[in-house]
Amino acid sequence: MPKIEMTVNGKAVSVDVEPGDLLANVLRDKLGLIGTKIACGEGECGCCTVLVDGVSVTSCIFPAFKAAGREVLTIEGLSEDDQLDPIQEAFKEKAAAQCGYCTPGMIMSAKALLNENPHPTTEEIEQGISGNLCRCTGYYQIVQAITMAARHMAEKGGAS
Image (cartoon, rainbow, N blue to C red):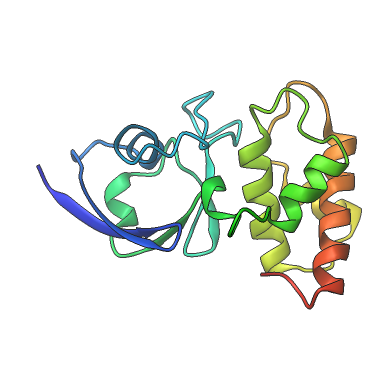
């Protein structure tokens, strides 16, 4: 079984993967990072969104071997020292988590958006999360949360 090495949430990991293994399954089943959700399994709903080298990817269709040598950030990697990321704080404050199943993917898409564009308009936020589906239809609170996070991050010196 081939082994790949990658950095996950700031830590170097080495994991055995089969040629057909997908990143979401490796993260959940082999590394125990169950914050990454798998819903559609077709890259359509965004629940499995993680960042690979800072770019959001739908990990349920992303071949695990493509993560070799790269940096993967999951929802578990956002908080530091028991401090939530500003995006997580804003989701909490704006009650944007609804049932919570889409929340990790939404937050990771928001992270990628705010890293690229720290001052997005409402339309840019809507576009930035357009690949993520919320079956609870909580988009209004989600957009408000991302707007609040952008503002807080700007006040603290920019996106992290």
